[in-house]
Image (cartoon, rainbow, N blue to C red; front, side, top):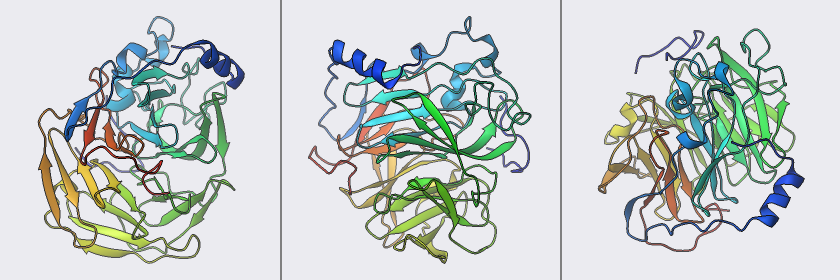
Length: 380
């Protein structure tokens, strides 16, 4: 993948919205679908009938959103996802630049085993750089979402920061939350938000509830109660644009890497306020760090950081020693060409890691330990 100037454009190439009341009536009247059980054996398990393609908006009804990449771009144009641990579901949204103009949100529910689209895209659409990152209806324009998505479980809100905007491609520094029950977007303050960039390593800390993100120069935190950003570090020197991050809730660390160095940068986030100092840990055996956009999560049952680039193998990083080991299971999924970002998430209720990639492929789960009951998000 070629590097890009963060100040330049990025990339190349249903249902009616319901109110919370209408959705509640629907759920009351319709018996819930029963999901096929997730396999108990260790390894990869394909989830049947979870392709995203059948749920894409109609090109006949929304012709202007198609762009150069079509609905593929929801995941394949640097698209990410968030995971709702309490709801046991992954929420996906993406597109942006000239690839896809739709800002609709999709849901993969692990309890029911169903993929669905939660709402329709905004229509008509317009260039996000000319109109402050919003469409005519006041909702955020479509964008490459990278690892800029998280879920706020206490408020039941999807969090979104910045991204490469439709149609211009330039990066935004806008902050939004989405209420899935009400199909409602709210723009939040961007004071002290990260610089407009991509790959900000946006991760929620399950202990404090804060969201952490890192631009090229500084670490920031977002308070989901006050909906405000804070600067949390001084300028440590430049970190390259593509960055991947994870939180270790046991050691209380925000860890981030940039491709090619095999060096972890980390901050002690034990304190929920105040300035923090960057530290480093060499991880020479961790080849996943050669890639820009691996999927990366903390697995609490193993107390390891688990990373995946593509195919059958995952790497398990020991956060104390910096050493990686590899585990391989047959039948793994295929990653998108632009990377995985947040579409690789730990689902504690099911005790598996969920991975959703190309929209014509089913989603997969990876079981690394025998089935067992754990806390709702693996830590809290």
